[in-house]
Length: 106
Image (cartoon, rainbow, N blue to C red; front, side, top):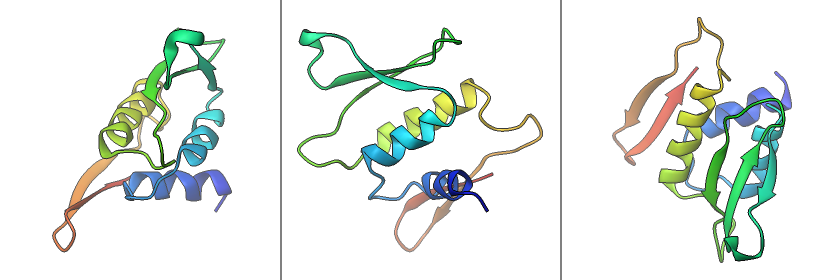
């Protein structure tokens, strides 16, 4: 199993400790790079791919480097939108009753 596949599987478990650097590695695999919107953007970051007109906008988490659940959900929706999962691949949601964490399976 490749590093990318392991990272994708970790992401799909919606861990409570998924970090910004991991997100950047994941998106880089699909050709997306971080782009700040200028001096006035604050912590707002856009992930762009020169070959696509689809981008992802997120606020960089601070003071810690850990993504919030809504950011993971937005990223999952984005990955679906850009076709990161094969046409035949189904991403399904399940809940672990012991800790109410969401888990997505490819």
